[in-house]
Structures are given as C-alpha cells and as structure tokens.
Amino acid sequence: MRLHTFLGVATCFASVLLLSQSCTAVHDGLGASSSQAGASSSQAGASSSNADYDNPLLYPSQSLRPYSQEYSHVVFAPQDTPPHSAILPPLPPPRVGEDGRLAHSPPINRYIEWLDANRIKTLKRSNPLHRDTTIPFYEATPLYAVNEPREVIEQALRDHESVGIVNVHTREVQLIQLREGLSQLVPNELDEVLFLYELHPNVHKLKRALFGQLQDVPQPQPVDHFPHTKGIPILPEGSVTLEHMLTASRQDERAFWIPMGRTRHVLIRPLARHMLGTPNRHDVEDLPRVLREYEADKLKYGDAYASLKWGRPLHRVLEQDGAQVKRPKIPEYERFGSRDATRDQMIDALRKHGRFRLYLQGPGQAGGAYKVELVHSVEASRDPRMSVSIEPLGVYKSRMEKVLSKLRSFDIPK
Image (cartoon, rainbow, N blue to C red):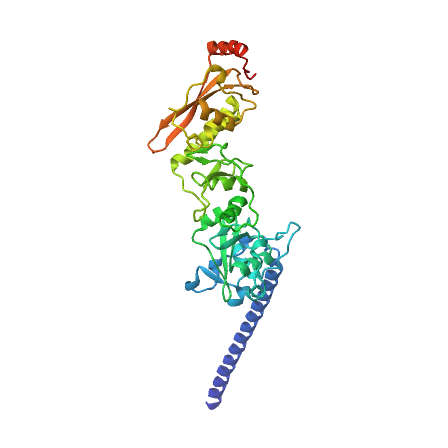
C-alpha cells in the first residue's frame, strides 16, 4: 500500500515537471521569432527612409506627433522636444542646387528640424540697407519659399526673430519664431499671408519706398494714360513697375489695380495694413468692361483718344466749368491725326477750346474727320465730372473745311 502511494506521487511530480519545460520552450521560441521579425522590420525601415524622403505623403502631419493638447498649434524645435526619430526618420542634410535653391524641399512642418537656435544666435545681424527689398512681409515677419537654403532662413531669424516658410503648391505656411529656442505655428490669417507672398515683388519694394526704407528711389512715371475705373489706374502687364506705382500711390485715390494671373486683378492700397483694397462687387465687375472698351477705342480711334476717354478722370486735370470756353473759329480748331497725337495735346486743346478735331490715320481705322467735345455732368458727389464725346464731322462740314483750308492756309492731317 505504501509503495503504491509513493509511485502515484512520483508520477504526478514528473508530469508537472514535463509540462513546465514544455511551456518554457514554447515561450523561448516565440521570443526568438519576435526578435527576428523586429530586426527585419527595422532593417526594412532603415533602407526605405531615404527613398521615401521625397514623397511628403509618406510623412504624418504635425498633429500626429506626441505633444500635449496645450501645444497642439505650437511645435518646438527637435532639440527642445523628445527625440523626433522615435516617430519619423531624420531628414537628410540640406543640399543646394545650381539655382541656389534646395535640391529637395522637406515637408513644410519639418523645415524647423534643419535649424539650430544656438547657431543662429552666434550670427551677426545684417545691414538693413543691404537686405533684399523685394522680400514680402507679413506684419514684421519676412516670408520665404520652402526651398530656400537654410543659411538664408537662419540669417532672417537672426535679423527679425521670426520667419514664414511658404509652400504655394500645397497652400501651407509655417511661422517659425526665435525666442529661447525655436517654435513654429500655423498663422490664423493664412489667406492673407499667401496673398502677400504671391504679390508682385515691386509692391513690397513700393511699401519700403513710401516709408523711407528704400535707399535709391527712382523717378516716378505718369499713369494718367492708363485706363482708370472709379479714378483708380489699372496698371497693365509690363507696367507694374516701382516708378508707376509711386505715382499711383500719391495721387487721387492713392491706390491701383494690378494683374495677378491672366484673368484676375487685385486692388492695392499700399498704406493699408496688408496693402489689399476691398472693392465692392460693382467695382470688380466694372473693371473688365473698362478694359474692353479701352481696347476697342484704341483700335477705332487711336491710343491718344482712348487714354483721354478712359485714363485719369478729366476733372482731375482740367480746371474749368465749361462756361468760360468759347467755340473757336474753323481755322483756329486744334486738329490731330490719330497716328501721332498725344493725350497731353488733346487735354491742352480741351482746356483752351473745349473741343478739337481728330482725323483717323491708323491701320484698320475707317478714316475721316471726327469732332471731339468736352462734356460736363454733375453726379451725386460734389465734384463735377467731365468726359468726352466723339462724332463724325459729317460730309458737308468736311467739304467746307477742305475749301477753307485752301483759302485760309491751315493744314488738315492726312
């Protein structure tokens, strides 16, 4: 009986021992398999990190990084945060191409990883007179493209303590600030920043000139001959120059229209906060009509007459009420050929006589003589408005004029 009990206990103990060894073996096997799989995954990730760098879609957005909710819109530079490589592979060193731009642009929210606050603070501030005057600014922050070299961005941070990085293709902006360290955020006025960045460089140069921050200011050029709408000149493509903008910014409405793209115009008010005017719907719709009729009158009557009718409002350049003007005798009429006349000559004739005669000479023009007269009208505003009317001289008056030209010895343009 005792022997039978002993054998039963021994058998039970042996079974427990065998079961324990089996579990240990299974656990060790699983651990080895997991380690091998992890190593393989790590090698694959390392080999693909450089290949995937050029595709920004493979990188998660900034909001996926493990920061607290308190800083959901502010991201600190890598040296101020937990190791970035725990989430994304490190960026390769920046490489500048032959055009002076970065050969490969990083995702815009990762540009900050290339910057070093300590290195920036060792830089000397640049001379304001030697800085690029065409760089756009948002408030006091200069704006640069995402493919701008790191050295340019770091110098701008040293000079201004903030800089904007812009990607016009993805319509993204990051504002980077230098304080104790570096931090970045997305601006609230994103559309305004993108608008300022895409403006013609001469507009930014103009603002510096108006505020006395431009060393060499050129001589202003006239804009009276450009088509106007509501007293504001429309600068054509090729004439969006600093010289023309200076004049438009200092007379009448102190504003001007410039083209942006093939079909769009924007109203610029250089002294406004973001230099952007706010035209009403009627003004926006009226602008293409003015341009169409201006071009039509150029073809039909010549450049001088078109600029007289559609250029700077005549009440701005003529000081008369119409009652003082007397009709001239036929030999005393001012006469102009459409090919050679100027707007200033026509204005002088209107100032003296309130009228003149125009003879069409240009290619594609119908020919013949026309009478041009000054027309006065009073609108709702206090200022009198002036315009011009044009009508054919008529067969009878044309023949009489030719006869008198021989008798009185005055010339008729041919």
